[in-house]
Image (cartoon, rainbow, N blue to C red; front, side):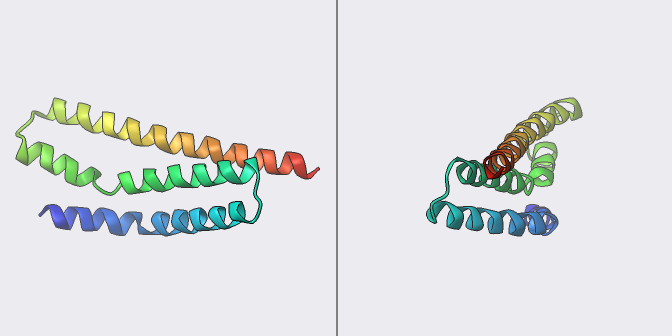
Length: 111
């Protein structure tokens, strides 16, 4: 049952995973070809967004595991799921900040 839930999460996160993997590869190529600070922040931001996409996969399985496996009341399940969502959201926010900063630095130095 957990495998089906994780497979569903993987299928729903697959487009984002593919996109961020491509972004990480492109950022690594740009960095190897003499990239500076903007390319480093682009790589870090893409990696953080990839991590946030990976952490989105087991969310439903975690809900199911806490409810059936641990027998927790709904209030505790909501608390732990919200903490997990907050952690995942902070990682995504840090990734977005790094990506925006990378583009800002790149376009600022291009003028």
